[in-house]
Image (cartoon, rainbow, N blue to C red):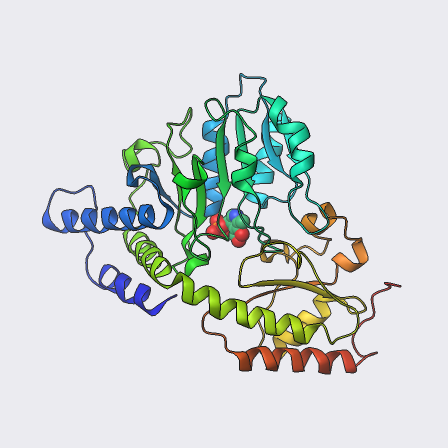
Length: 370
Ligand SMILES: Cc1ncc(COP(=O)(O)O)c(C=O)c1O
């Protein structure tokens, strides 16, 4: 977490915090802290603070959206993409199993949703909901959400973006983009884990977590006050430091990729598409990704194979498969997410370690890839 986030949260963790619904002074203090955080989120995203519903993170926000806003009695489809996070794809599968029409758009080889192909489908689809990931969690590729939104009927189709990876890293202005809803998690912008928000400017058909009047009765349960305060502070810091952060992270990523290119057989996925500043998703063609990861872990590097959310399961990433990457290369994929505390020296140490592991062949398991 950003040190200012920790500092902002500490008083709410150390001292007795009132319940924001209580009328006494401790309660009123907690309420005021929650409402200030709501305003910070609205300032970061260019939306009204009334639209911000605090949740436990992106997964809950995505579920809330799909389970709360889709009209199951309608034959109008939900349009999304093949490169969504599982917290969109899984609820979509459930909806589909219940008979809901679902259309998934495809990415091109760079991991960018194919606008030409979408143009063939979207204008005539009469979609009731369009939900597109803002920046993919594996490749970091930033999707053309505004252009896709312009292809649907904005009066009758709700446009949502799972922006969990993008919020706080790149500017997002919901008003300018003309989109209705966004999901995200605080821990992706140097805030605490287990808190996030669904930002949405319409009322749902169903409430996912009912039984409490919190969050305008849209998400019941006593608020995670310290977490929400941390999220608010993280949003504020992200807004103020975004340009500096982008510059620093891009420099680390670009130097890393330039050095990586000197290792034979290295491939960077999505390299030719617009990407988040902090993400590099690569494979070394002849080396098994997870074997490299374990060796790198032993040397103190915390990297992921594909998406962290998938790393317990050793199968090719659905994102790479959708991009047309063959299974043997996809199984070698490694994702690096640079952070603000990383330095050029860290990048150098990482590349040196990779080079050392490659030179260790055949000690490193060979993946049949020729
Ligand atoms: C794009 C995307 N959406 C949703 C999520 C889920 O967020 P959380 O685990 O905080 O609920 C993630 C997590 O990495 C993500 O990358």
